[in-house]
Amino acid sequence: MTIDLYTWNTPNGRKISVALEEMGLPYTVRPVNIGKGEQREAEFLKLSPNGRIPAIVDPDGPGGGPVSVFESGAILLYLGEKTGQFLPADLRKRIPVLEWLMWQMGGFGPMPGQVHHFLTVENEQDRRYGLERYMAETRRLYGVLNRRLEDRDYVAGDLSVADFAILGWAWRHERHKVSFSDFPNVGRWYDRLLARPGVARGLAVKLD
Image (tube, rainbow, N blue to C red; front, side):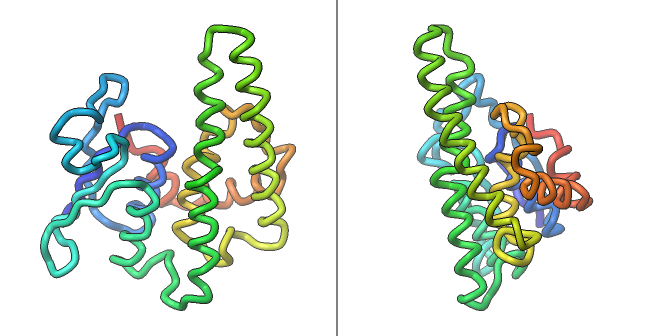
């Protein structure tokens, strides 16, 4: 049965399209135009009370009944549990997946997202302050990721939902004003992921 993916062409939306493609799950994109405020409409708020994309509706959820899931991290964990892919069953192996997924959700997303915001601020003083603050933190986080990838191919050992989550934001590295020449281990990880057909399809599918 086909999963409905309510989303838009954003880093958080791309996390889920990549995961769905990599897991081989059929899905239909249901665009939610955040530029027009469709994320605040009553019907969407029934699925995502926080008024943020993405959200999914799986007609074949637990027990065979439909289920909706909002928040990209929760969706990734749900899909990993559903398919048994990219989320280890063994708790010791799952811990780093959860750690790096939470790292992305708490930092490597909110911080570059602020860079996106302040790049559009018209007041020069406000823009300079915001960019200095959030670009510094964004680069620090890229440095954390670069060190993590120094001696491993993927952040949690094997390819996992944590990589898909982080990729959604690394996909916008140019918009963050970040060059992979400064973070070569991240660059190698990024190229390794983009070489996967499922990832390439997930990044190419039209979400808007």
